[in-house]
Image 1 (cartoon, helix red, strand yellow):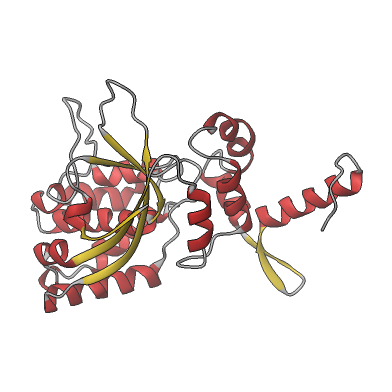
Image 2 (spheres, rainbow, N blue to C red; image 1 turned 120 degrees about the vertical axis):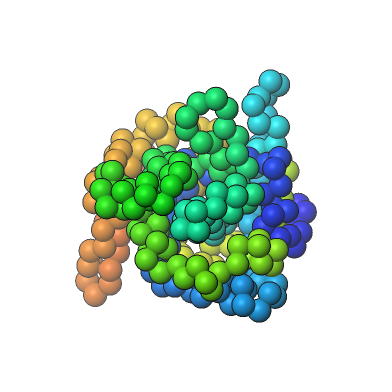
Length: 282
């Protein structure tokens, strides 16, 4: 394990691809998080002082011979922050009509195809909306995207893009000062280290994960995506409507729970009482 205090331009160093795995939860930041983020970016731009945005825990992923990518890191923690930063720089670049603001922050892996490929590879939940936003080329395209939605209006990334478009004050933001002063503490794990232990340790920070999210992270990793696609995704995450259904909060007694957590708890009790498993409830 190695830890470093690095500015964001050193983290996105033109050599590393960041893979947000399929088994992680979707983007969950809301307006309170976005408001504080924008306020902090304005303060960095005004004071020109260093700002610590949080930790970024990465695990080295083995790459096959002949792979298009030489250095691939799985994002264990920090996807909310790097996703927010990416969309922020994209929207700011479109508003200022200066594509270099985005391209000098993010690796451009594009080939001859029309679709831009950047260094963050998002999980399946947010992938469509993420690619739609980062592939916008002009301010007019951004406005059209926000007006029409293109089927992404339920996405938190669509909501983030919309919020930034409405609330960014170009006169209060300096992309150069932000890139120079915003720092991560990056924690790099090698391929043999146990990321689940690290993940559980830091779960008390940020937006707390639900029981089902913790369970999904425990059961599925980069090596058993086939089981995830067979057992979990078709039931709980087949599409946005199904995921929203299971993510809704309902009351049980005087407390609120996510519906998926109540379902899994009830299923567990049924299995124990059925006597098929020699496992105590304790």
